[in-house]
Length: 257
Image (cartoon, rainbow, N blue to C red; front, side, top):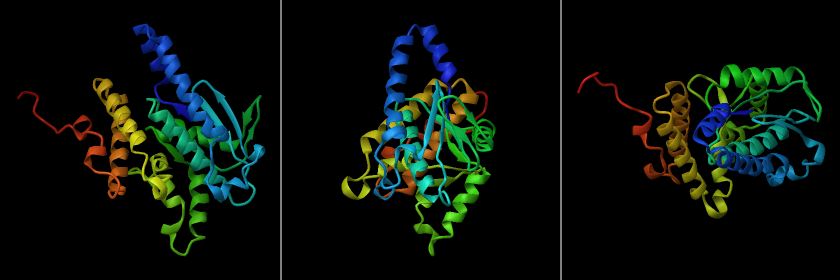
């Protein structure tokens, strides 16, 4: 994973003389997000598996690599990965930092000194060449594993992956990180305040980058994803929870009024 627009944020803060404020915001977001990656609460069914050596994390500035040793068919590891990555990605997004990444299954080595292996290269290629938008995509090896997990269920709609993953218009599977606002759905309902912060963060990016099409389009994608999630769970969310479509769906028009 890496943070979208990390270098641009540093340059902009330097030009505006706001480096200290930008650093504080980024540092707070990274600290909060990494708590989910390192020792955040896991779903009950995973607690018995969650030991200190269950995964390894390597981070440098805006680049983060995590390796989960696969002990069987990777279904449990996927559950842990989706849970932790989704929480991290959401925590960063509501602070204004959107993530892009790739998830692969294969051989990899991760320690405090180095990261190495085919899975790392596949994940990096997925992030840098395929993900494009602020989404963590599944590479072909990860999709193959997820498809195998779906065969375990008589009714595939009952599989956890159905809520944890979304298939995009270009065929890519990506992590449905907004699902984390429904983790307490049965006990207390959606986390509406946090969801509203996500909406505001997206709208702020759309306004800020309206004159930079290459970057603006990435946040237009997030806006579409946010609104799709609202429609998917329309029993919880209405139009008031959606990103303002006027910010990312401007109609075609003549060059003169």
